[in-house]
Length: 146
Image (tube, rainbow, N blue to C red; front, side, top):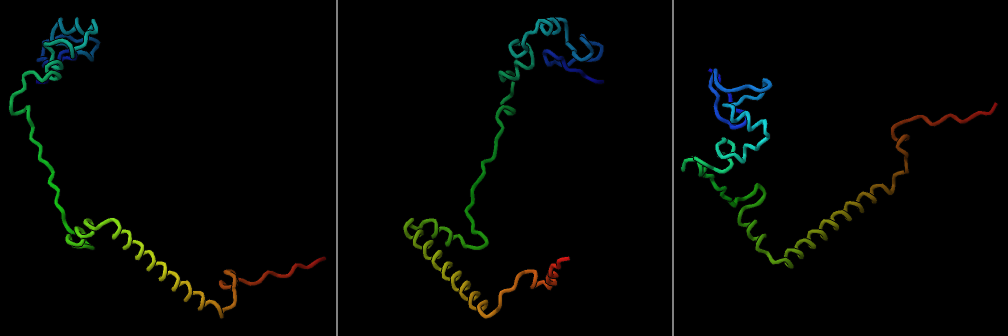
């Protein structure tokens, strides 16, 4: 047994009951069909299911209030640092944090300078060679005039 739903009111239509309008619209009775053809809004008509749903009519206590679980935040350590280390960094004063940052930047610059100087020292005694010569390409043949 297939139940249809009224296109206007939202009520159930049992087999052999109701009216059909242009194959797609099914109505529970002539009143619903008439209101539909008058282009009345079912949200404003009190006996329709849509009105009752919008205005929360006939909802029982249990269904009305759905309980949702609150998410609980846990503060945990990350792979690289323990929770105590993270808390200590968080509680640092801004000027101490800035000083630590400047020290880290200076240290990285010194390391970069040292590697650049070592690289320059190793390249001083080698002759300059283009990429094509390094790969072993033959030099171009000299142009001849006719």
